[in-house]
Image (cartoon, rainbow, N blue to C red; front, top):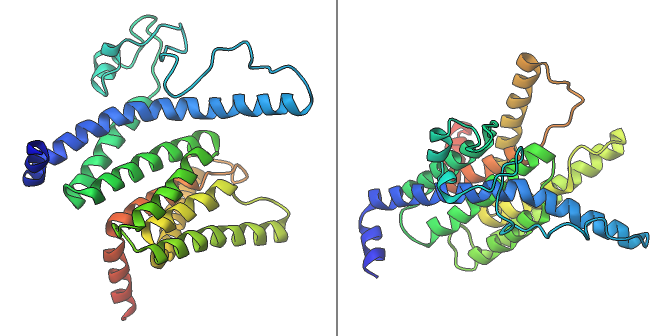
Length: 290
């Protein structure tokens, strides 16, 4: 109780500890980002083998989970020691290389740790000590993992989007960010909005313009923020996505036919709206003269 009272009475200490926690969680998120798609791929292979009555191709491999086996260097197989896994510090001390074989470590690892810590600090600063901050931290870290996986694999796993959806509805029971009716309508409207766009695009072009994970992610965002903020999320994510895509085309020569994941832009917009949605909507309505 004394620690809780100290954190409640010292915003600076709360922010510092939250940033440190965010750095550690970011290290775990790197495991999720790397392993979850592999776990899903193995599961799909097993299911396909069962359907055609073939031996399980994954039967001889050791099980892969988020908790084991221990992380290792993909180049030499060196098991990562605890001292080599200190967020940001280990990367800096090892100069971005494996301590054993000196192979380069991907920039994703320190970047995810830094993002996790910075965003956690912003949540702590904006919401202060309390249940809303705790819920928003879980929201933030889940969106980070989902965005990174979608960016790398163009895949939004149900293992992340569906728990986020149900957690948003659960949080709404206590009215932390919105009430339950608005959350339920937000989840329904969020899913149907992108599902309708998907069906219309497929009808007109014969192509699939987005993945089904985007529907579930917007449903989850609608559950957290409530239906009044869905339009803001869609407009903000579309604007950021369009600018990002245009920059890639102009400066990096990206082929316009190559699909670009929409999940990270939805996630970024949803995170911004959860923290500043009311201010954004008021500013927009004032600009329109309402």
